[in-house]
Image (cartoon, rainbow, N blue to C red; front, side):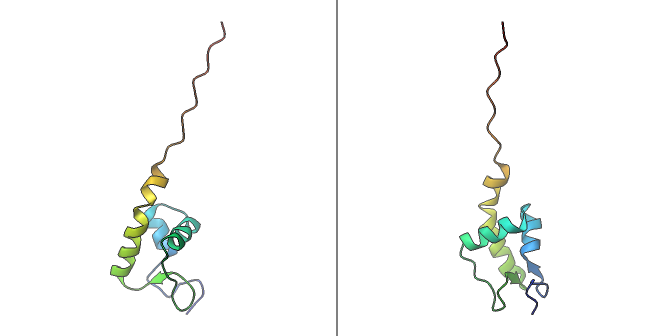
Length: 80
């Protein structure tokens, strides 16, 4: 199988698209959740149930990071 995971129905790219994240962020989250790579050293799934299970794990983290708004800056005082 190819090193880039193109032989899988679902991979990091599809997770990134579904979660609205960058591929690098998805890989970090996969490592954080201790998701194992396949025998060929890539993250990939051919089974929809397995893919959905991994997506659900990562989705619990994604909303907090994706929806986090930057802190508001304090309003400037007008000079008198």
